[in-house]
Length: 308
Image (cartoon, rainbow, N blue to C red):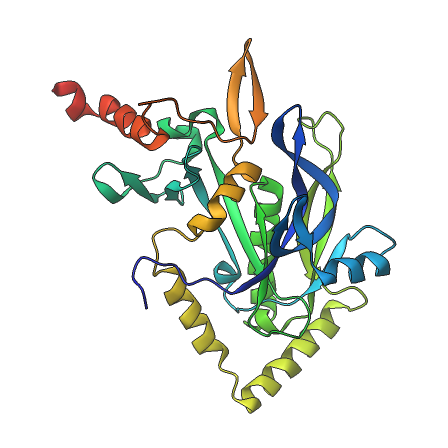
C-alpha cells in the first residue's frame, strides 16, 4: 500500500443539493431544494447525471426528495467523516485538517501535528477560510456492493443530523448499521439567520414504508445471511479504517479543485461587505501562496517569533 495515499471507498458518483453556476462572469455555488445524483464524468455544462437520477426523479414526480441507500460499514465514522478543513484557494490543496483538538497542517517545514482550537478561536480561520466539512459514502442499488456515492457538505445542520443519526442507528440496531434499509431524506427549516427563507439539509431515516421494528428485523436477517455466506463485516470495517489512516488528507488532488469551488468560495471584502465567489483567486506575480502567508502569520503571532 502506497504510504501517504488515503484509501477511500470507490466512488461511482456524487449526491448534491446544489451546483456551481456562472453569474456575471463568476462561478458561484447555488443551493437547491432537491437531490441531484451525478456520475464521475463532467461535461461542458457540469457533471453528467447518473441513470439513478432519472429513475428516482420519475418515481417522485420530478424532484428527488429521498434516496434509498444502505451503508458500507457498521462504524459511523467510517461512513461519515467530518472535520474542520482549510484549503489553499490558489492551488485547491488542503492546508489544515483538524477535529477541534489536534490538526494536521502543511507548513514550510512539512506536515505537522498541531493543536486545533476550532475555527472560532484559530487565527488561520479568519474570513471563513476554515469550516466544518463532511463526506458521507452510501451505496445505491445492488449492482456494486462496495461502490459508493459521496455526499459532501459544509452545512452545520446536515453534519450534526447525520452524525447523530448514525450513532443512534448503530446503537439501536446492535451494531448492524451496514445491514439497515435506510434512505437519505431532504428536510427544510427556517431560522432567524435565513430571514424566513427555507434552508435544506440532509437526514438519514429508515426506508419509507417500513417501521423501525421492520427495519431492525430486516437488518438482523441480512446480517445472519451475510455471515452464513462468509461476508466478514468486521474485517471490512478494519480494512476501511486502515485505508483512511494511510494518508494525511482524504480528498485527492484531482477532486480538491471542484471541492474548493463549490464549498470553500473565496471571500472578498468590498465596501464593508462580504461577497462570496467560487473563482479561485489568481496569484499575482511573485505573490506568496495562501499557505506561505498563513505560515508567516503564525510565526509573527508565536511568542518565539516575537522574541526574535
